[in-house]
Image 1 (cartoon, one colour):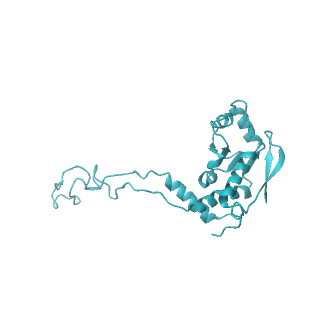
Image 2 (image 1 turned 30 degrees about the vertical axis):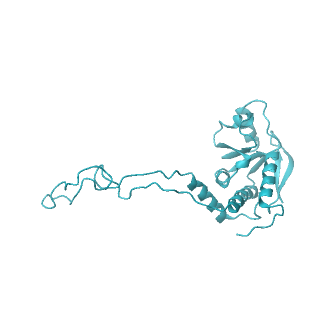
Image 3 (image 1 turned 60 degrees about the horizontal axis):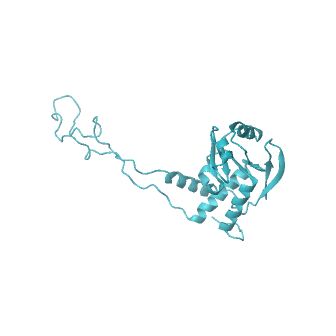
Amino acid sequence: MIEVPVHNYEGKQVEIFEIDEQLLGSRVRPALLKQSYVRYHANRHQGSAATKNRSQVEGSTRKIYRQKGTGNARHGTIRANLMRGGGRAFAKKPHAMRQKMPIKMRRLANRNALLAKAIDGEIKLLDKIDFKKPSTKDFVAILKNLQIDRSCLIALSNTTGNEARSASNIANVSLTQIDRLNTFDLLNHRYLLSDKASLQSWLEQAKQKAGVKVQEESD
């Protein structure tokens, strides 16, 4: 079991939250994490970039000046790639950049990214996150009390409440719903901040998706 301290708003430890590393893959798997990260990044591309080659650019095909006797380099059509306004030498064509990955591997990668955070002590848990009204100042104070001085991913059960509004305008802080945690977001931030109840709910859902009897999964 990995023990993660649970703090209150003042940064004082109030209890210990235990995470079963067997559920998260038992060990960090760099190759799996990289594959999942690259896949997520590639799938964010639209794949719509397009440029024209010399056959698609409008312009005359007439030889711009005679071959010999001018003292200049040989040139043909004005649509050549090294002429101003000419076509591109290696024109971009729209194409799909999406990558596929089995759903079991995707789920394991998400859990394994959380395991990496837990091992490195980069998971910050609060006993509760409950704001009566939006207050960026109060949320900044919480981050300071928890010694969060780098980029932080805040995972909440609801991203429309006062807590989300309080954190939405803080530099180097990103918001996400706890059920949308993924390898890309976890690895792109130094810390993960959540409340105990939300993380417990995410782990229970992950356990159901992985199977009731959690066994060590092989590569």
